[in-house]
Amino acid sequence: MIALRHRRITLTVMILAVLLTLALFVTIPKGFFPQQDTGMIVGISEGAQDISPQAMMDRQRALLEAIIKDPAVASATSYIGPGGSTVTENNGRVFITLKPHQERNATADQVITRLNRALQPVQGIKLYMQSAQDINVGARLSKTQYQYTLVDVDSAELDHWAPVLLQKMQALPQLADVASDQQSAGRTLNIEVKRDVASRLGIDPALVDAILYDAFGQRHVARIYTTLNQYYVILEVDPGFQLGPNALSRIYAKSASGTMVPLSQLASIIPSTASLAVNHQGQFPSVTLSFNLAASSTIGDAVTAIRKAAADLHLPPSISTSFQGNAQAFQSSLSSTPILIVAALVAVYIILGILYESTIHPFTIISTLPSAGLGALLTLMLFGMPLDVIGIIGIILLIGIVKKNGIMLIDFALEAERERGLSSEEAIHEACRLRFRPILMTTLCALLAGVPLMLGTGTGSEIRQPLGYAMVGGLVVSQLLTLFTTPIVYIYMDRINESMRGWRSRKSNTDTGKAAGEAASS
Image (cartoon, rainbow, N blue to C red; front, side, top):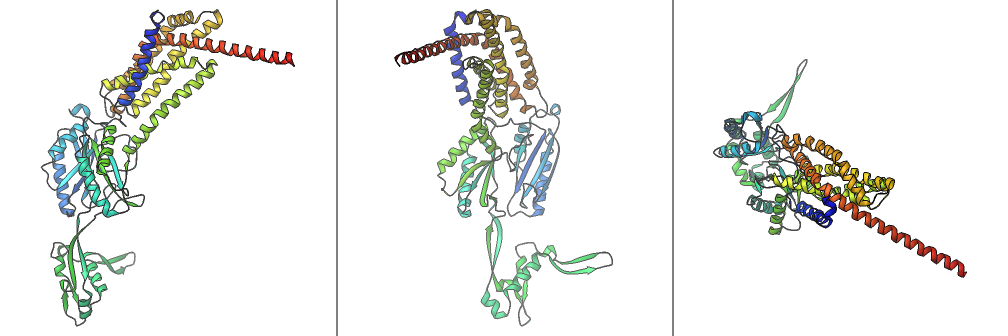
């Protein structure tokens, strides 16, 4: 048998497989969930911060007209104004339904790229799109898929540094469609009443407030009662007089003498800017910078690049930064992955130790696992897939599937040693020869079950493919290596077990002799 004739070579190959598995686990690109093509694209549109509702509606309609011309789009609907993830008048939502996969020749991400080029001629509005996903972790919804939030108690300091970091992130090649929810350039007019002039004319400043509210608001002035109903009487100026930069020049206040005084004589009108909305996180002002991933980038690469960009800017200590939504969940999953794998291995070791009443032979069975991990990682890298949550699930699943190869061999070999008195080499040789067929059959059964996951197509199939690739690749490599490495590990572990028995026996005899000598001397 090859494994018995070339033990050192086989053992070296197994050690190299373990080291290569660890190296691949560290270097393979990390992801979160695969990007799916569910046939739905959602978008958030943003117009100028001083745009009127009518102009925003016209710009939104222009977007829809350009979107519906794409050959992969089946339908598109939208609305403007506050609601859901949009909180200001210059925002809108767009929902794009794509044709079935067999009727289009582009994925959802490719359609988004194509639409971004087609929408560039539409002036005065910007549409941020992302493909709708079956799994969204985190309740925060933004213009694009991933979020990076800045929090500061000083809103002025936050307003200064957020655009600086935004510009830095827009230059990163790992990111695409970088956007911000900061809207602090809304146009406003500050009216400061000249109290000395108002006092001289006998006009109360409160009267000026009431006149402005009547001119630009809606005041409840009366209620009409009928037999069955009641009706509110609302005072409102004709909207035609409320629009335009000269609306304030048409407002007058009545002085104590009964003359009408223009508002420009009573107050100073100062143009200024103000925030359309002030977002908060944990009761403090915040700015969220959202982004999509570039075509050849992973969330792991993006997180590393953003952290470096923020560190290079040397942000003030008062500004707290953190990833939110899917990006935050990715960080949590990445930090817990090694712990999960180690916990799974410890659980397997404890169960096998109880089963065989041994602290040595569970390591023989666990030695079959690195080959499965190596196959899974190599397959994912070969097909250009990152190691994401679904791939990690596949690796943990392989721990349960692959260890049965070692159990079938070790269980047979130990029984042969106890019942028929065979040596460890003879027992493991016979185990490999007689258990090869059931090992091959069970491996092929699990492997063929993973092929539909790996090759399947259709809506949302991208989320299942990493599981299939990890299972098939891990099972193929483990099947090729298990029958060569497991016998060698079994023989060496059996020798270690015999050495430990001899050491415990000699120690027991020594302790017994000392006790007998002490008893005789006493």
